Structure formats: C-alpha cells, structure tokens
Length: 165
Image (cartoon, rainbow, N blue to C red):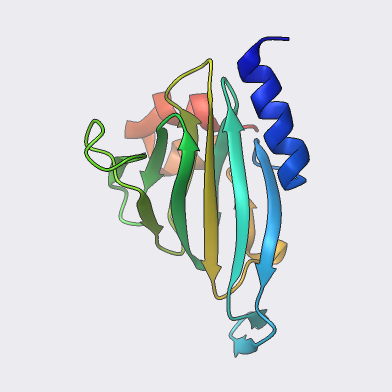
C-alpha cells in the first residue's frame, strides 16, 4: 500500500467516515439541538458533516431542498460542478485561496444539482459541508440520468459522467 492510500485509510479511520450514497465518504459531526418547522416538516437548524472523495471517486449529481456550504480542509482541490435551477452551469474550484482561481468556501443554494471530483487522481479531498435548515435524507435526491438529460441537454457530457443511474 502506498503512502497516499495509507494516509486516506488513516483519515477514514480517525474521522470515522462511512460510505455515502452519492459517492465518497462522510461523518455527521453536528446536528443542532434546535429545530424549525418548515413546509416539509420539522428540521434541525443546521447539520455539519466531514465529506471526503479519494482519487477517482465522484460525488454523483444530487440536490438538496436546503442550502449547503462546503469548506475546504486539505488534499487536492475539488471541482464542484453545479447546474442551477435556471439551467446555467458553473464549475467551482474548492481549495486554497488563489490556487488556480479556487476558494476555500462554496455556497450551494437549495434546488441546484451538483457533483464533485478530486482534481488529482492520486490524492483525496477533505471538506466539511453544513446544511441549513439541517440535512434530512427526505430532502436529498440523487439525479436520474434520463430526467437530467431531458432537462439540461447542453450538459450531456457532465451528466453522463456524474450520474449513477
């Protein structure tokens, strides 16, 4: 096992990361004790997770019904592909400030489709994600490739690359 794979295994063990349905690894680290009633039910005010992608892993296109912030910690820069509700596409580079036009924080508004990948295939990317109001799997939707292709045909290459089904 090479040094990078040893480092990744150490992070998975130390942070107690588990496989995520969208791809990659995660661990919830905070769930607000306070809740709020919204149109879809009661939700915590906020939740926070560690999220890690390694090498060739991808975070498949998905969306949430809540706002989400991503915060870069370490590893390679992360490319986050976003298709906004109005159909516009944007590539966000999450990483160290001024490193190839990247930024250490990213805001993803509720309802947008997004997917992510490491920029270096022999590395990993470790971030935190906070969701407001808090994350609930009832508010999480993995993209259906056919539906996304029908809605956003100009993004077919990305959709084919980042859809599980």
